Length: 50
Image (cartoon, rainbow, N blue to C red; front, side, top):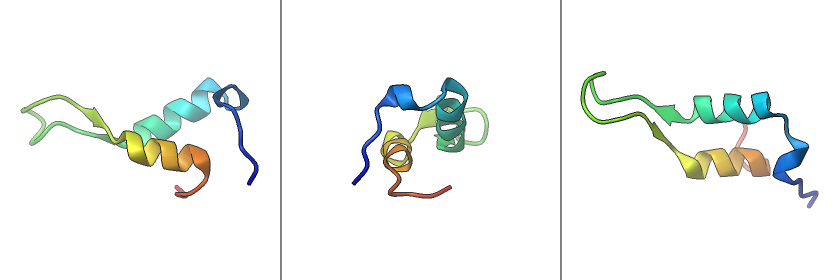
């Protein structure tokens, strides 16, 4: 398996992945936006595709 360091990815690329896996507030009012860190990590590892 070809592993990459986080420094191998551009900041914009990582931000796009984080944005894709950010869940919005409930009904747009309650709580805060959340990032599904598991999906972000899996996509960075190449396990999950867009």
